[in-house]
Structure formats: C-alpha cells, structure tokens
Image (cartoon, rainbow, N blue to C red; front, side):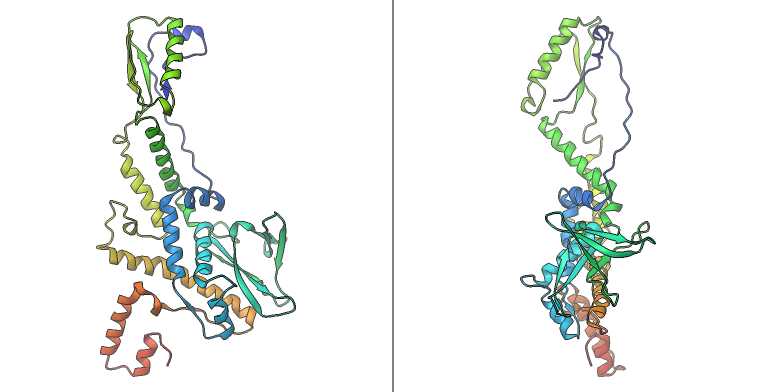
Length: 375
C-alpha cells in the first residue's frame, strides 16, 4: 500500500508542524513514441484490442485469393516460396502494413537465372532506405539476424527486387504512416488504465492516501519516526495489502485518489478501445465493445468491415504486385481479387446475380461481364 505523508521529512522542524492541507495539480501527460517499434511493442504485443484488430484485418485480407491470367505470375502467387503458403505470405504482408505502415517483399533469383524463383516477405523493421544527395531512394539496406546489412539496388533496367507497399504519410515521402500512430493517445490511455487497475488490485483495491494528524497538538519527532517505520514494514507493498490498520492518537485516514466510479473508469477504457479499433478500420461492434450502436446488427458491421477496410487494403497490395511484376516479367500483368471465393460477400453476390437474371434487356455476354466473369 502506498503512503503519502502530509509532513515534510527534509528538516526536523517539519515533523512537528501543525496539520497542513496540500493542493497539487496533475502533471503534464506523457505520451509514448510513434515509431513503428514502439507501436508494435505497446500495441500488438501489449494491447489486446490492437492485437485482435490487426489479426482480424490481416487474416481477412489474406483469405482473399489472388488471380491472374499470367502463368508465371500465377505460379508465384500460388506458391510464393518453398514451405510458404499463400495465406501465410499475404498475412505477413498485411500485418507489416498495418503495424508499421510499410510492407516489403523481396524477389529471389537463382544464380545465373533471370526468372524469379521465390517471393519472401521482409520485416519492415529490418529495412532502411538509402537515399542520394537529392533525397531519392537509390537502394534498400536489409539488416540480417547477425547485424550485417546487405544492399538491394535497382537492376540495369530500373527494376528493384524489393517491393515496398506503404500507407500515405503526409510528412514523409519515403516511409508510410502506421495506423496506430494516429491512435497513440488512445493506446496509451488503454494501457495505462490496465496498469492502474493491476496496481490497485495488488494493493487490495485500496487507493493511496495520507494519515492526517488532528490531535490538536504537535506530533513528537520520535513518534513520527516510529509510526513511519511501522507503516513501511507492516503495511507497504502487495504482500501486506488488506491488513487492518489501527489508528490512534488523533490520526485519521484521508484518501487522496479518485475512485474508479469517480474517474468513469469503464467508460474511459471503452472509449479508448473504440478509438484503437476505428484507427485500424474495425467496427467496434465486431469486438464486443459496449456503447457502440453504429450498425443495426452484426451482419451490417461485418459487411462494412469487408467493404470499407479489407477490400481496399487487399486491392492496394494486388495493384502494387501488378506493377512490380510488370517490370520483372516484362509483360503487362494484372493481379486481381477473386471475390467469388469470399464467403462474407456471398449475400451481395447472390443479390447481384438475381438482378442480372431479371435484367431482360441485357445479353448473356453483358451479364457475364457485369458479374466479373470471362466471356
């Protein structure tokens, strides 16, 4: 249990002073860093809301199969690398994009061969841009497990074996902005409230306070020292939490902390959790966060999650792969999303087919084109 003394202990005369009333102002708020490493540590590794949101978006986006009419590109997408499934490959790419604002994919070629043998996702924390005198990226430095760096430069034809997919950053032209950076304050508030609750539980749910001497006289110095030693030995720390305290000699206990009800503790945590979820594009209703009635039901929230968050993110990665593989294979390659194999969009797909079937003014080929099918 934490004890706050209303008496100073820097001078002997302070111990014998008359009872004092202390007023204090809250100190300035301290917010965590916004770099990717700090956000991963405080968000994905320590915060259940951020962890679940990242997993939901990454797993949903990775479950959408990629399709292309190009044979070599299709083989790479179906098997990016030995012992690496397409879903695992894409989940890593989407997770890195959400956590750091950047995702990197490296194309590996066998010695003496021009064709791409495999695609490997690279941790964004291990990649550093190498810029020229004008500030343009001329190469990428990748840090290995043992600390050494290797350089990845552009080929003679201008194609780079390292693909970067990034989210828009208004203050950085090279690296992307992590979504959790915008929710850094909500993340700190949610984590701090959990730390505060744990500390309070360790303290037997008793807030800190002060012993006020109101006996109408002065406390002798030897009595002051003895009381302080007994309190520190018998009542301080989690091991002594909950032990009864006997007050005598005009001592009164005065709580100095606000109660959870006075702090509106649960509402504050729920509001912070909603901000974290919204920054990552997940409707709070899907997480079971109380107090959010934006959508009429769970189905509407799930459909909005796919339409507003998952599909745009997956389309961004598919477009980046298309442009990147164009330069590697020397052909126009279009990588698309196979939405017909997404169960969450089955209801919309059935409604589209019903409308096309009832459209008697369209030909069969026009209906297939509107449905996204080949002639």
